[in-house]
Amino acid sequence: MDALIEQFLDQDLDEWTRKVIARHFDPEGGSPYWLKRAASLPFDPRDVTRYDEMAAFGPFPLVDLRTLDPADLVPRSVPRPLIGRVFDSGGTTGDPCRVFYTTRMLRQRGIWRRWSLRAEGFEPGRAWLQATPTGPHIIGHGVAELTEYDDARVFVIDVDPRWVKRLVRAGRPAEAEAYTRHVVDQIANIVELQSIDYMSTTPTLFRAFVQEAPDLARTLKGIRVAGTQITPAMNRAFREVLAGGIVGRTYGNTFGVAAGLPAAPDGGILPYVPTYPHVTMAVTDKQDWRQVVSYGAMGRVRLTVLHEDLFLPNILERDQAMRYDTGPEWPCDGVANVRPLQITRATPEGIY
Image (tube, rainbow, N blue to C red; front, side, top):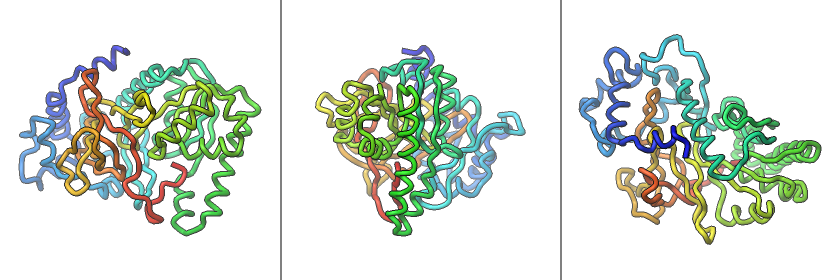
């Protein structure tokens, strides 16, 4: 295992919680957002000394991420002016949320990405096709991660998930389907004309590619799919198409990510482990976000971001999952069989 990953996994979570809270609530070097909020909290945040005590902060108000300057969430101890990327969420339930990623945060993501690629069997120095949202979306940063941490040569196709979701909301499924075909045609063109080893995309797009060009899909040595729409049945179907090729998985969003773990022997459970200690996930009762369900039970995903440079406690996700026991190898719970909490025309998943 990568030495840096071992260092992450050896971190005591209560100790890490104290470190992150002390950094963000430091009167001189803390983050402007949290220093301002501290005045309205009914407790002193610096009295929170254990991970389990963070429920006191309540669910994080995502509306704040839609309106404030993302720099306000970054501690003042990070030199100003901030230089780097602001990433957007998909904007499924309203205006996009925005967060600033420091160089350190991106490096930590890259280290986990390198580890997960090796664990899944992907070989470095190969040719990839990335057919995902790019632009403001963190998933698009995978191109930089592949080149920097995997010595890869990457072909890229852009995807606009917001346009597809707008079409779905407007009741224009034919146009949404036409856009999907437009993307799939570009995928087919590159796979047919170039020597592509691996593909990074969403489950929905890969399924559409298989339906449109099954012979081309079979030429791939592996795929890595991201999103909430891969089911055990889809995973088995993708493995059949690739005939022994790699089917890697990742789950997450702009705030945090979880790496795929090996599927259960019967293929019925698709587990993930979050990028500890910077991201943790709990599966909670759908009616009580404070109550963690039993292992094997389904519930709503609650995500907490504990980066040195970004603190977002208790984000209630739009996803549901099974609470997964990762065993003695991992210091935190995992999630499995992730899927949307609810799909409506108002909150479509589209090409994800």
